[in-house]
Length: 442
Image (cartoon, rainbow, N blue to C red):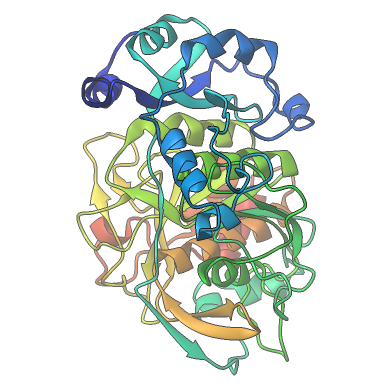
């Protein structure tokens, strides 16, 4: 591997800080096979291949890991400390620094995350076992533009109707037998609309460690709302969940602390759970290629990654939704128009030049929030779980379908509403019934 434009920002970090934080992806032939890795510990045990590369990484007082640990040692009773697992939480009154490994391993993904100096970066770039080295990004939640409490009084929400979801239900497709990954602020599994929906839950603390025995919880409202759109069950005959018999593998990965470690931990964990689709309403503003190899790896492992495009309007978009390997989702409104806040972008690339790939219901979307309540929220975060849920329905119809086949059926089912420009909506709005026919066709 040689230096490229991708490493320019790493060089700048090294010049300014003396260290740089990197995401390293092993060559597919060198990384642990997914089936075997699924038996390992998320972000934990280091196999021989990874152990041999550990010497290229370093611990540094200038790293984010060290800064977070110093803060936790200074104020162990802070909110951040309450999100620490026993593996990383300092004891009260402790003056000794808490040991953290110089790098983390996500064996199911074939990924390492850690801090390097100049000599370590050079060694990684020259190592034939390495597929790519990129700068670790800093993700943030794509927060709704608005949130308004409401009551549950709609038999079938407009979003479900717009995507043609009831027609799929009529054919017996409800997501039964399909596991959908959900990386967000967590989930209130006790909400009446989500009882029985959460098959597994993981909480990744502020250092990125999985908290053993964590019970389902939502640190915000965002996660419960997006979970409800994917797999919410009917409540008193009212429906807002696209795949009401699908199961969720939900992880609390955002916000706060070492977000990239938390997100990678959640992805690695979700792959180990066996998810078919991964719904993520998070991202980094602008085009940042460093996380692209991880997104490519998700698809190679049989997972369809569905990302929100962002809420900053035309001429903007977020990564990883910007990558061709991501199914990126913008927001439509009840009039089948593009929501004004929905991000969109044109790229100078011959294939897949427009983002988002599709638009889906994202304006005044009704779903559940913690405390047995309901809320209307607006944002591409609300559109993304609609498409993830639709993919789950299609996966039930054709269990052997690959991520590419599911995505292709959704894409070819789309239509661009009259008057809606392609540079804002790309392919347009999916049609669930047409997607099913295309998936089942020759």
